[in-house]
Structure formats: structure tokens, C-alpha cells
Length: 114
Image (cartoon, rainbow, N blue to C red; front, side, top):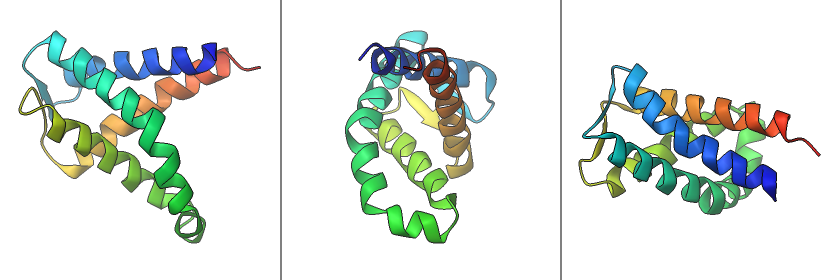
């Protein structure tokens, strides 16, 4: 339970960091970045397991490459929900944001391992 909470906090913190350090990710303010991080954390909590379950066979066939596209799509879904508060220039920048979020979530997961 605490691991999930801290992974959500890591996802929330990752979006403002990506907006600050990645030139293809733009945010109107830190508040929009934090809200986008919260929305992305909820998307990762609810939709990501469902999409991963549905695409599991294809992900095995593509050696996990499909997971990158799924995560980038989830980031673009979050960006579309933000109505211009957070802008990602291209699909590849969305993939970079997904990589940053997943890296922080992985580090937190390792720190709070059961």
C-alpha cells in the first residue's frame, strides 16, 4: 500500500521535472505540471494495468517494445485532458516523459520493496 502511494507521488513529481528539463515538454506553470502529474498517476493506477493485460500477447511478441508505445499513449491521453496546460511537442517527447515517470516509479519501487 505504501509502495503504491509513493509510486504515485513519484509520478506526480516526475511531470514537473520533465517539464523543466525536457525541451519538448512545456507547462504553463508548476501547478499545471503537478495537476498533470496527479492525472497521469491516476491513469497509471487505473488504465495502465488494463491496457497491459489486453496487450500482453503483443508485448511478448514485440519483446516489450509495445509497452513504450502504451506508456507514451497514456502520457498523450493525460496531455489531452489538460487542455493546453501541459503541451508535449511529439510522440517521442511523450515517450521521454513516460521514461522519466517510469524511472522514478522504478526507483521508488525498489526503495519500498516488500
